[in-house]
Length: 172
Image 1 (cartoon, rainbow, N blue to C red):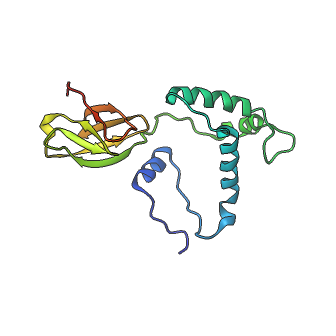
Image 2 (cartoon, rainbow, N blue to C red):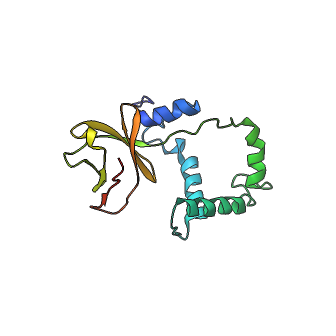
């Protein structure tokens, strides 16, 4: 009831990092979020229709940057005479500079198996033998996994999106 919400811990960490206070919409109050959802639909249509495929994130990011530059010349959806770039230029001085990037990962606490492996998303990743039988933090981003124990990174792997694969690093 009301606007009391329990937010995800990592989301609150993000909010604290960038100094904003999250505000939740009231359930079943579509008028509170309709404009934002409409803008999300517009951006999806502008950038991801037709659906493109990319070899890696670098290729995707280069394509998105080019596409955003092209779209900046379009008329702003809520303005009749101004472009998206012109509206952004008015708001840009109000934005704070980003001094430190947020480390956006999803964390899993996993136990290292007797075969020096952790299992995540139906794939097995190697871990140093000294951590067998102990719980470690596995920090997952879009492109990699970092295995962390006692505040130190003990292993790094490229993320595998296949199924039932074994990803080894013999140099742990």
